[in-house]
Length: 84
Image 1: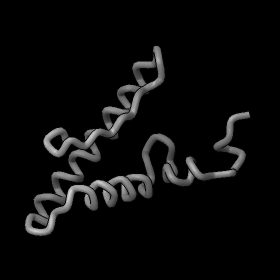
Image 2: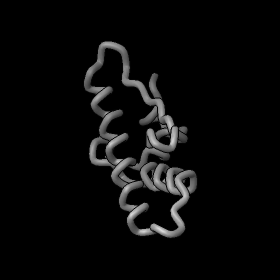
Image 3: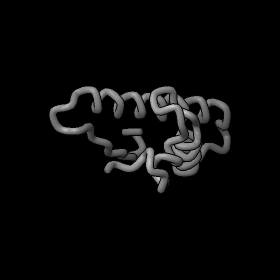
């Protein structure tokens, strides 16, 4: 992503190294998915469209740790996802 001057900024929580590891894992997953998409769509690969599609796909996938879709957690009004 550096060669296209695309910057995704996600920071972990201060003094919480585990959260930084989670961020790095997200980066690796997105990068891998973009590489696969670029290999499959050589002639019509558009980085902006591919990045948007990849992030949307990632956010609609059930994750092992939280056992739900990230969009559901982020946009939810469900009490189990809200801090009290």
